[in-house]
Length: 91
Image (cartoon, rainbow, N blue to C red; front, top):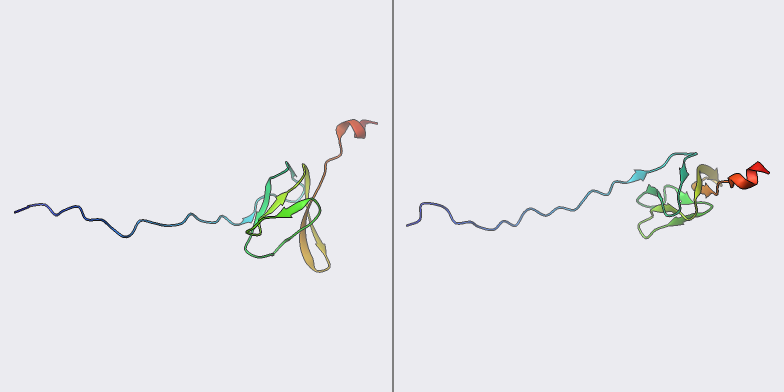
């Protein structure tokens, strides 16, 4: 007769990772193309200039530049404006 209980399997132990939603960059920050600007559920913020929307409504930058939070026609937008080249600014 066994003096120890057998090792049974459990049906617990699975859990999904958290979504980590929210704004990832601030107004006026300089970012690179492909950077995530915001993770959201639905369209709290809409894509503005040079910003794309992912399958899960994630907003991401299409170009290198500076982030700008705007309001247009009652919608909150996030846009990215390309930084002016230093060579052009020197002229």
